[in-house]
Length: 482
Image (cartoon, rainbow, N blue to C red):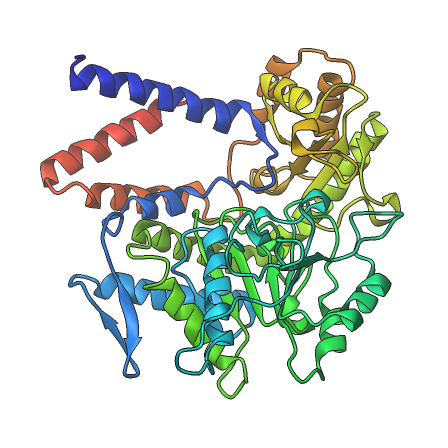
């Protein structure tokens, strides 16, 4: 067996090479990812990492079951406040550790809510009917029966399939909803839950349209928006709570540039007939779905929420301008761009391209990766399956944070066209170009962030002498860099 020191050196070297490649050589255009700031990363490794802070409301009081949790309790309270300010809503549940878990927590809570008046001895039931977006038209996996909705929606005894109907889309543009067809669908059926939101996401969802129709129903459906991909664009792209949504869920590490966690936001104030649903959601977060809810990433999320609330509007505006610029430039360079050119092809951070004229989506995504452009292949609405994907899904949020503006995405589009259309090897040129975008914005500048990061790093080392030596070596390494 190899000595521990040898294994540790090998793994550290591999991790260093991978991080250097992705952070210094590559353009990261995967729409579901974002690099957290240095301060957010440092918060993730502070002492709360690995600790427990289980808590629940008992007799009107929040009870914690571990000692040493006063700090992280205050962090959670403060983070709920920052996130509520971001959304402009009444309630925040932070304990889900992913967007998928956030959705599952809502589905579990809704089942309990629907069974609240069940007679003694009566079997519980599932959600009677759900409307959502079809997976092949961009619907998110976590809102599908094969995902987080599994076992929470009734089955049709005639077919044996879950009672789920998909939100209709326009025939001339399958990336946009079809309100007229949706209105007919609502008249013909009475869903108990409508889930808006997608993972292939270019245009607004018809929240206000649906809210107006169902407002006077005797038992209206719960309106939920899975904003995982566009959470960081809340308000600039769409503001579901202002349009009538009850719940917003999402992951906190895509356009919202935080740590990898999930969130449930609610606009169910006291006195609302749906207020008991929020109580059930809290109970399904803990003890229903989590025990330890990854306290290091919770601390990091608070730091990211500070950053987002400080830079919300300029970041959101630049992301949306950059997405339109990338789409327009790719089209000009001979790449087919999905969406409507009259709308700039997109209203979010995403750009969808069709590449089947040059090869399968999987093959083109690998070709881009080989040339230091990271994307993910995507099935388009007319594809038979994800295994036969003819599209590539792009997102501009991470590189926007590293300082890219419209003209820079025009240059990048030219390099991508060389890779996609002409199969030209331009990896070295791409890596050189990335060196122009290494300093992260929309956070504290390095001169202010580095001393704070060093203090957090030193604090996780119990031995003061070891900690001092670590910080000294860190400073020496940083000073040695050109």
